[in-house]
Amino acid sequence: MKDLDLMTLRLFVAVCDSRSIARVGERENIVPSAISKRLAQLEQDLGTPLLKRVRRGVEPTAAGETLREHARGLLGAARRVTEDMTSYTKGASGLVRLMATISSVAESLPDDIADFLKVPAHQAIRVNVQEQTSRDVVRALREGSVSLGVCWDAADLSGLQTYPYRHDHLAIVTHNRHPLAGRKDMAFVESFDFDHVALPAASAVQLMLGRAAAATGRTLRYRAEVATFEAALRVVRSELGISVVPREVAQPLASAFNLAIIPLTDTWARRRFAICFQDEHTLSPAAKLLAGHLAQAAEKDAAA
Image (cartoon, rainbow, N blue to C red; front, top):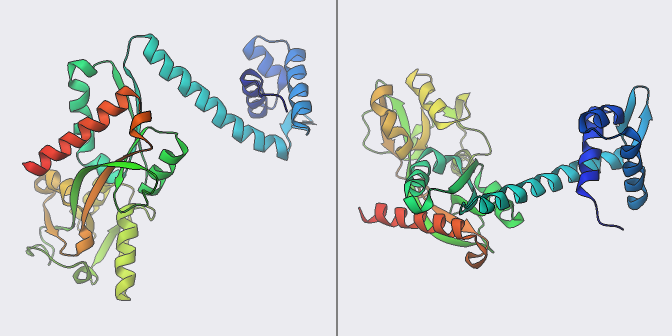
């Protein structure tokens, strides 16, 4: 099979999306017959029909739908290559793609990255941060779609290299008027008689709470489910339930939201995060600098 041509793939995706060869030709300033010739050659190279005629144009066959999804990934990767190389040609030190968990993004990671970017020697470095679950962070690192990851160190990090990062402590957060508000600390099981505010089911915190509840043979009562820690705290402020969030996330809002923060005594409530990557020797100079900066920030925090 011949190598796939990116221009042909781009035209193929455009035709699939618009359902019209003529419309794509007009937009790209290419005669429709030239596009048709490219697509016919693509079908011949792959040995299967990719498009079928319909009443008002064309639409992809089952094989064409599969190719469209693969083509999107290839075109996205090619675009990222171009962006990264453009950064170098413009004299920048590079673009770093980092994927991190919701908890780390809600806590110290943005401040640590901002401090890194303020260093004069790093002024031309760009950092792209994506927010995902620990499992998705690890998957992206193994697939090579991001350079660095920050995730819970209890995730399956086999095959990856790591630096230790910061830690946090999960806590029960209630309104100041809640019956639990006067507690100094407590075990998670002691909160089961009260309505909870849940985070997304796939989040690391929610998965951990589900396992902890299952181990006791009991279930939690959820009054509401929200997408972010801040949203959970707003529901708690409205006195509709209590929530389990990192103490480090709740503390800055405790006074304004009239919240009480009660650290959990369970061993799993103390979490550590890790800076992850495939191989230090293959990191770009910019990614290596950022990873080192994050590790040093964590060391300073631990020593403080």
